[in-house]
Image (cartoon, rainbow, N blue to C red; front, top):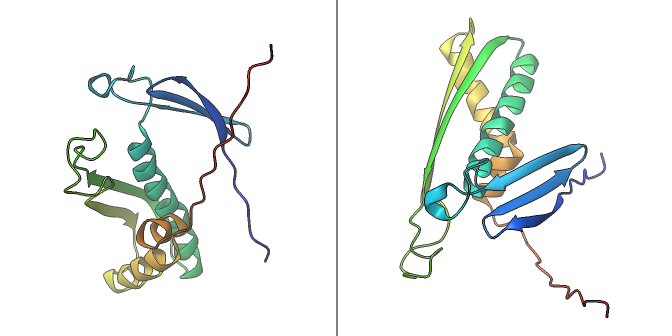
Length: 150
């Protein structure tokens, strides 16, 4: 199968708010008021956590079908802790990203625990978002200056 390509484009509407478009959807990224935003929507790191949970949901249901059991409902709880000192230029003692991310998957299913243990192992191995968080992905950032027309 050929690579799938996903794209997001957007622009800032304030120093703390970014409006993105992907396919036919608009994503609003905003900070809480105590971080300079208007608290209109989730912030970038909350989107990462939601993306991880959403990916585990999709892969979890896919793998359950492959293992021939049904998940009636899958609750996912995810939390991550970040020290904001590097973000705000206070200190370089810690990294800017998550120090840890903890997840709890709570499937409603009749599958036995042995099946769920196998299911979890496969789901973790196949989740693209988890893979991106655990492994170095090359990121190339370019800048393009826009000149005002006079």
